[in-house]
Image (tube, rainbow over all chains, first blue to last red; front, side, top):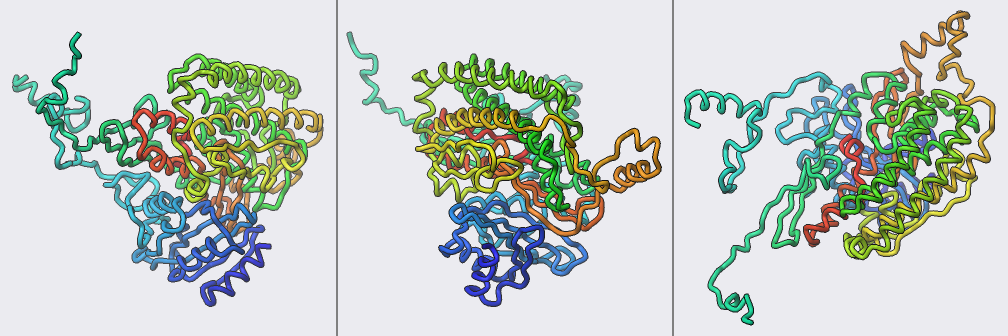
Length: 197
Length: 404
C-alpha cells in the first residue's frame, strides 16, 4: 500500500527521492532539501496521496554527519489511511546555513511545529510568516536540542525588556512588578535608605 | 419621566477607539495551565490574538537523551498530568515496536483498562474545568469526586495517584492486584451515574448552552489543516480515532463507537468528551470480561525484563541480567520508528531514534495539545472577549505536554 505510494512519489517527482526504507514498518522517503516543498505539495494535493494531515514536524541532529540535520515530517491520509515519513538533510557541520522551505502554505499545523524546530535546532524555514521562538524566550542563546548544547549550560540574566509606545498610567510604570524581583530589589532598597519614600 | 440618555447623541465627547492590548495569563484563573494570550481588542471584539506558550518547558526531550530508555517513563508521566497512564503505555508501545515484541494478552487488557480509566479521568477533568470556568461549580466538584475514586484505583494498582511511572518496556511494573477487576467494576458504573447527573445539570442550563453553542466554530478542513486530532477534531465531524483507524493493543476486538460533532463549536467539543466517557466505560466493561485471571504480564525476554528479585539474589544468571539492564539499559535496535496511540487529547506519537545503545539518541513526543493549542488563535479571533474562556476550556490544553 504505502510502497505503492513511494513509487508514486518517485514517478511524479523524478530525482527528488534520494533514499527510501521501511524500517519497523514505517515507510520513509528522504527527499532533496531543495525540492522539499514540491514533494510535500504533491503528497497533499494528489488524490492518490491525499495526505491532508501533517501529524508532526521535527528535526534530528547528527553532528558527525554532513549535512548535519534531518528535518522529519510525518504525514497521514485520513481518507486512505496510509502514513509516510518524509525527511530532508540540511546544514553544514558547524550548524550554519540550516535552511529549508516552510510548509506553512500547505498545512497550518506547520506553523508552530516549524517555530519549535527553529527554537530547538536553529533550522530556518524559508517563507515562514512568523519565525520566532516558541518554547524559549526571545533572549535565549543557542538552540537547546542540538547535540553540542550542554544540558547544564547556564544562560545569562536577561534585562527587562524595553517596550516602546507603552504609556502607562500611575501607579504603573518603571517600578511596576513585585518589589522582591531581582532587579528592582536593589533600586528599591537604596531609595528607601535615602528616605525618598 | 425624562429619558436619562437625553443628551447622549448630541454630546461632543469623542471616545478613543484605538485597539487595546490585553494580556490574559500566564497566571489567569481561566487559563488553567500556564499560557499567555495577548489579545488586541476593539471594544469587546478580539481583533488579533497571539498565543504564547512555553511557560512549562522543562526540556523533556533533552532530559531523555541522558538516561536510559526505562528512565524516560517518569518524564512521560509528567508530560500529561491528567492522564499519565496513556503516555506510559504510548511510550512502552513505541519501544516495543522497535524491539519487535508483543506483550502477553493479560498485559494488553490491563493496559487497555488502565488507559481507558485514565481517559475517563482526563475527560472528566476537561469537562468539569470547562463548566467551572463558566460558573458551574457543582458539576466540577462532582466530577472531581469521581476522578478521585478512579485515582484510588490507580493508587491501589500502581502506588501513586497521579505520576504512576508504571509502564515498562515489555510489560508493566506489577501484575494487576487481586481486587482489580472488582474495584474497577464498582467505580466505573458509579462514574457513569455521576456523569449523567452532572450532565443533566449542565445541558439543561440556558446560560451554559448560550455560552457554548455557536461559539468557537472550527470547520473540519481547518481542524485537519491545524493538525487537530482527538476529541477536538471529532467534534468538527471527522471520525478519526487512532483506536479505530489503526487498532493497537486489543482495540480491534472490543466494540465501541466514535462520537462525532456536527457544528464543531464548543458545545460539540464538550459533548464529544461526555460521550467518549461512556464509550470508555463500554470498553472497560468488555475488557473486564476478557482479561485472563492469571498468566504472565511481562514478556519472557531477558533482554528487556528485569528478572525475579529472588533470582537476582540466588542465581548468577539473574544477577548478571539484572546488572546489564540496570547499568547499561535496555538495548533498542538502531533505527527510527514513529508509534502513535490515542491519548486524552488526540494522537499521541513518539518518534524514537536509537543508535543501538542503551541511551535514547532522540525522543520526540508528538503532543496533541501542542497542535490543538495552535488553533486557539484562529478560534478566538473575531470572537468576543468572554468567549475566550469556553474556547480555551474546550481545547483542554495540558501545559506539560504542550510545552514539552
